[in-house]
Image (tube, rainbow, N blue to C red; front, side, top):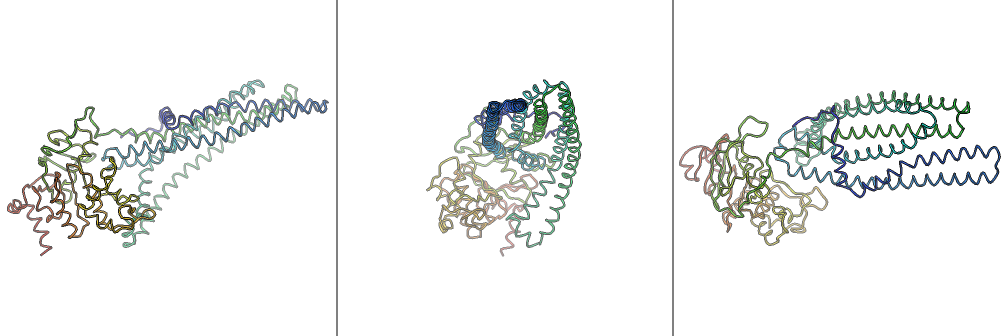
Length: 601
């Protein structure tokens, strides 16, 4: 993955603006209209102020009530300008917040879509995880902040053009003084943005480590071991050490900015009062009226503020572009496992079976092959068992069949069709899997936990309860307070806690509900008691329309009735046959089977 160079000019503003417009076109258009009006109001306010001061000065020389009536109307007009400004500001606040919500939701949708479709390899690489962490941290806020920066530049630019023209009518020296007093603060902001961006990229691994330690201390899965082994003090110490380092580096940056900002503000103050002294002298000499001096001082301060806002807004856009690169870096991750331009349709039911031909595989970023020279045929309707020690490549075979990865070499066919020629989404609809590390879907009801196996279709209640019976979940689900409508898990209000075995039965039911022609069971009974385990395998054997089944299990008693058993060792198939054939061969399978059997004698 190419690194982002924080020293290069950012190039994401246009893309950010397109995202904002796509997310909230009506609010964006209304915001632009208000910006133009807000930009013109300061000139109107200053001009009315000049008229008031000059009218008061003239009336002081004689004019009576008639003169004051004219002044009163001017004051009322000035109040009207202020009220209009207040109205526009209130509208702008509401529109900006609505726009921000639209953009935040839009960016979250983009990030969530990418997160649920990115290659599985992404989650097995620490560098990619850093990218995800940065995109989640920056994604929601940065686009709208760019828009706000550009809005600030536009509004202040219009105001500066109007007020600047008025100031230049007093003296040409105003322009260089304005620029000279504003530039130091902007230079500080730009340098700080580059340094902060570089620091945040460098600190991402430490931030993720701190987040992980925090999860260990507060997570449900780790809670028992943390207390049993008294790990709290150790975890807290490591967390605090990481946080101290991160905070120290951040405060060092902030201290640098504070010192630099102080010098920039000193330059600004000298400029303001130097210009005021010069214009006061011109007033004393009669080159300007008192109203001119008041208007000049007010206008100069405002012009200086507008110029700083323009430059600061530009710096804001620059800064947010730097950080938005983190988001686009994630959104632009290329897919290693993609959909072909002209995908081949997958048969709704298998006619022949599955073939692995000369399959080799090495995980991205690793040099150690996980699978080597795998030749394997699974016929339609056959039940095949994969056995072997941990790390022998069993689950990796399943990942390749589901096309979470493509083989490094070799091919995988379904009814003679190369899986790389098929739309991955369509391929996966033909496969039903329960992985060893299946998901516990809290917040969802028992019925929904099963229905998630085919969430692209409306729930089918008879089919759902039948799947629950096959998975051994129907009895305990019916005993829950609300039966199938009971919310699962205790993470959320009114949920019911389940045992590990009950969660596994729900996962089995979900796999059966999917009704796919290929059924993959990766340690499907690891959390079940012997009686429940036997019932599950009896139901598998009794299925009327038997799917093509691939069974991975360390409990070799469960695989005895498989049509064919393949033994993997260090990424290779070393033995194949029925249970009886392999026992007679006296090889690895017999050794493993008898080693387990000794524990039951």
